[in-house]
Length: 480
Picture 1 (cartoon, rainbow, N blue to C red):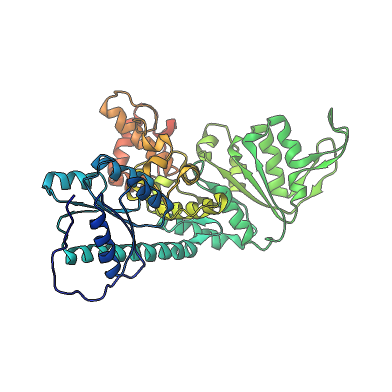
Picture 2: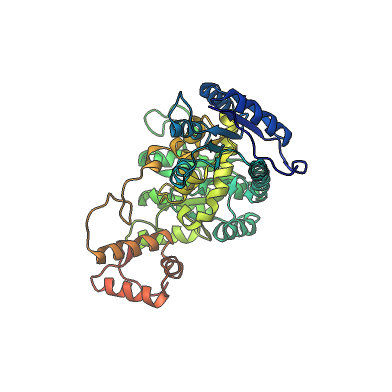
């Protein structure tokens, strides 16, 4: 290739680059490479020049350069294949193509493949300087945004829970108010929303923060073992009871007991739990002795316990005792604006776990996350970021680093089932059901989420109640 001469321009002022910008220069003509290297250095940037695409790719993979200045016409690789390889290795890099054969079609095609700019030869020094200065400013802006995100993350972190949406700020405010009082609390919300984290926060802010905090997952313990787990037993109470053992209520006396999935407790056990909650007394299995315990009880459920009461699956008196104060934790789909904060929080967390330096997500990766239904809520989002942080080899997590179910989600119906052709009326009914369940039966909130008035929602529910069923398969009821 013939040597390249930069178009003569009026001498420019000193560069205004804010951050050191490392520019990788790739051209098959050595004279052009040397001239560009000298020009880039004069403009105040750090050049790395080569005529070997392999060395350029190695330099990109090292993470030292932020800009690649490349001639389209290279003998060792196809034109856009090199661009795609660079973007694959580092999605956050800026790629500038140079060519003596400029055309609108090729420029559009290059930009679609990930190029930042497309410059015709001979290069205009003023335009090159402006492009590099703009990139340096963008990098500075990225750096400032990253610092602000970290500061915001620190300001909006509530005892390990992150949220800045109105729904979560309301949860945090209520938690602060009730934490200082030694009353029972019921945490309601879908699975994976962070109810156990909130229970920990309530304990940490309580007057008994220095005492024990014990957890019992009621759904993970067999019904026959749940009583011994909670209340303990004496020696000889049953086969295998070779020693006396205190239960969780005794063990945590003076502190907090957290009963997760409390709605899974069988009815027979609910009566015994009621006595412990109401009278602060327990009896070990096989012992007539009544023992006094002072614990703060925090319970959590992903079920509608009011519906379970109506169906005869949960005791009304126990529900009243457990829900002296009730806090509803919203699902992730109700607080989509918190996803960027949560992503930053999890990226920071798994950078420490995996000893990495991931700086964030690419724009298209963020877009993919915002389009997900998140049935597993915050827990599912954390698993996605943990997986992506582990597999990525770049500074930024890209779409290809995300799990398969995020990159290629299956077509789903309104309740998350595989898609099937169904009548529009059934779609409407299921969508209303889902919103009501998501909002814990609160029809005002459900109407807001659906974007319709309360009167319209009541009319839809009344039409369904003619068949004897409203939302979630429950008998028709009046009021909120």
